[in-house]
Length: 154
Image 1 (cartoon, rainbow, N blue to C red):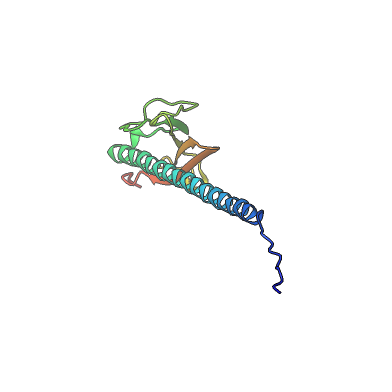
Image 2: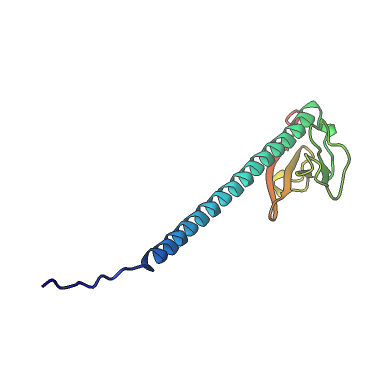
């Protein structure tokens, strides 16, 4: 005589596997999306920083050109100026600068004659170019240089 075997079918097993597999896929996809968004944000921040640095270099170059064409074109007292895009001179002194470069960046140039490195000489000054912009918080790039009137006779 043949014995009958009991066969157990796991009907619910495949449903649980499908739910677990879907959960794993969702977690992995969420992780990949988060990493991608983070990398895009870092890339944009890096791009803005490089552009800000370029604007700061451009501002310092404007001051060097003015200094080389004549020391008398440089302010004799400590002052702060806003420098718009493609400016050829210092323009007007301002206390607060709007975002005047591409409606995103703000560039200021500050002259300081009373700096200790200049030893109270009228032929030396500290120039600070600051470019600022707003991302998730305020960001800025600062370049500082000491300039002298090398044409002055001692």
